[in-house]
Length: 239
Image (cartoon, rainbow, N blue to C red; front, top):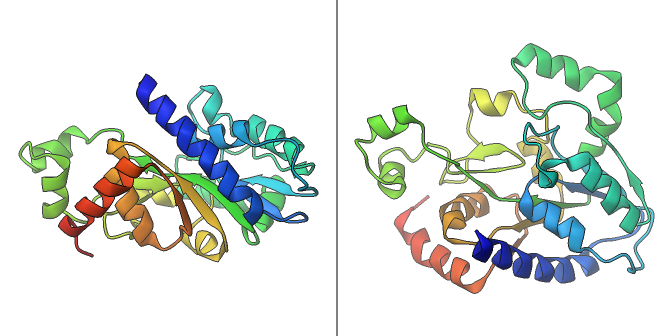
């Protein structure tokens, strides 16, 4: 909605101001797809003193065709602002089976990306929410709302970071979905010394709680109302 767009715009502008002093020249910056990351790269100024920064996508190509999901183009633009070098990814972010994923990860064209995933210095990520609950999930929870469902089944996915799903306890889920992702895994995310996550709005409250519990996020950019709802809701979902 319009209000959500305005909210994200305001949060992103503050995230950019906060992030600039944390970023260093001659380093590697990783980013993901989605509205928050796209807005961050769009709003990032061209007149900083940063230079020689490699920008790497943290996940493969999205099936969504909207501009905010065209990660290679955003990476190219962002690297230009940072007076650095873009790395492009040509693999889909989600593949049909584990064999395809293994083949892609080991391919020659993926090696520069894969190697850079090991030593990212700074990352910008969004916090994704579950777009909808499947009919089977809704059937099994007898029409309960999401909070009631989480209390009954705390292992279900409540959000994602770089498309990798986690539950309300902050545990990245062992699932077919996560196994087929071509992107940074939990170990790689854990090694990144500076990760800023951007998320705001009522629908992101539960995903934010789970995301903060993963331990991979160092800085959260959000708005006052959202964080107050997070603080109010977190007591309802013990670890």
